[in-house]
Length: 112
Length: 113
Image (cartoon, rainbow over all chains, first blue to last red; front, side, top):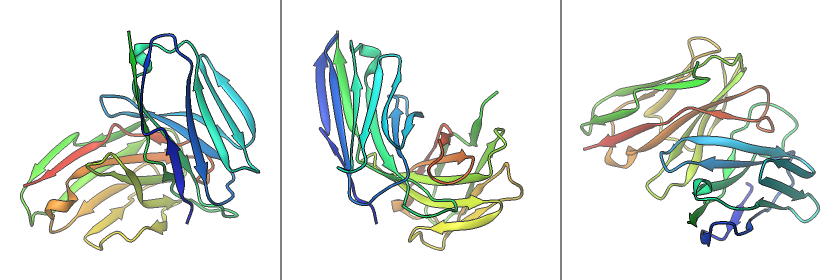
């Protein structure tokens, strides 16, 4: 079973700061997911990436497959970025439907 | 239009009761999932269905049973509810395997008294 570790667990920063959240996993994967859970509870998929880097607005996700490590960066952070960010991986299999294994999440608070 | 919907949003019930949570997706996806989020906010896979076939059952008690009347629906039935079943249950869907982007429903908050 894949073990997913995230750090930090909690992060409080000032508006405008550059944020980095890290994720490492134990077994090779086909892709890695970054999810955002809003304070209201809804879960949104931010990125799914299998190599390199992806960017969406102020969010950047990178992955190093060899090192089994991914990072999520937020540039020019804003209070509306306050949420729980969750890293998740599928089992490494050839096919079929597989549920995600989740990290414990990083609770991010951006103060004005 | 909501992509993945769940009903009810909140469910409060007594121990020992039987309850169901419904999930529907209008994305045309072939795979649906049920996840449980415990009191510590940790998410864990319960079931996945691909083309009406159960693919995963992650050490979930057999009091929990997923039922899929068609590709767009995956309902969760829970028999003999216990206090420890209190959690938030999320339905999700994707097209293809777990490597595909998953779309989550809003969650159902279950409280067993």
